[in-house]
Image (cartoon, rainbow, N blue to C red; front, side, top):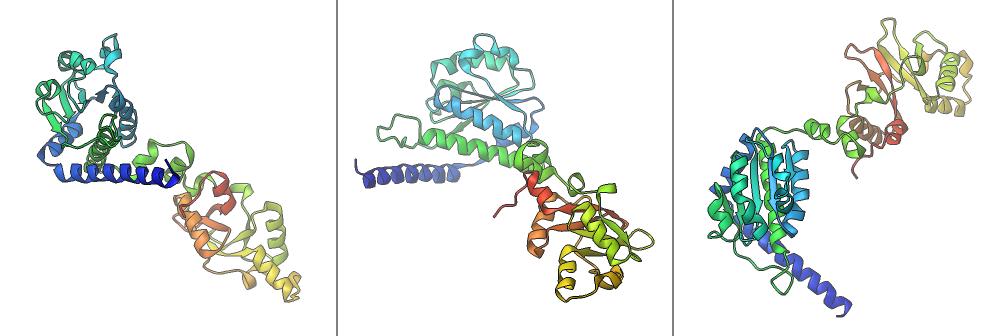
Length: 326
């Protein structure tokens, strides 16, 4: 085949599977909602059973359910017959997927699944199959062709199953009011979890590491504080500890460019009043976006009463692995 023929074949497969998904979406009805309510009401775990390609897809399906707060696992039908049935508990919901509904490994364990689990849901393309007849609820796929050209290899059917499972997971998590913070709690590692969980108080310079001078300090004091703490700025506080302003190394450069005798200045004369700030509970990703919008590299961090809690640097956020979406 030529390159163009290969590209065309790829486009044909993707378009065929996209058509299958359109057909599946249009077919959803009361049974979809019934299964979603079964999942939502499940006080145990959701077990996914399948053989061959659908069984492999189940690994991703169960992972998605877990990430959205729905405890789930994969039960391989072959291993189930050699002891893994012991994982099932009386409050579990079992979802079995088989397009034909007649896979030997699947039909063999159906009576045992019904004995040990609370409810059995079938996902199949054959409403008269052994699987369909054994289930408490049967979700029947529309009739469609596999996309492999021979109509044999699981392609369209596994794509449809993956999309259907995603639809159930998202529908149920939405019904439960699953929020970004909940999602972050299940993804604490990596950039994704950090974006959802890290607030600036985990990354800011505070205490002796923070740069702070009193409003009556000289500009020389501010220069020494900026140099000592290496934050690129110093907070200026009033008598009650609240933020009165900031002096940045950029302010100092601009003064020097004007050949101003900085040694005769007090910080109150040169500080930026009402600078951009964040609170200690601000998410680090939001602070980073704000810095990029305002073209600054650091922000004072305030407590609820307006007193200075610390300073957060752009590089401290990036070094923690938190990067905004483009």
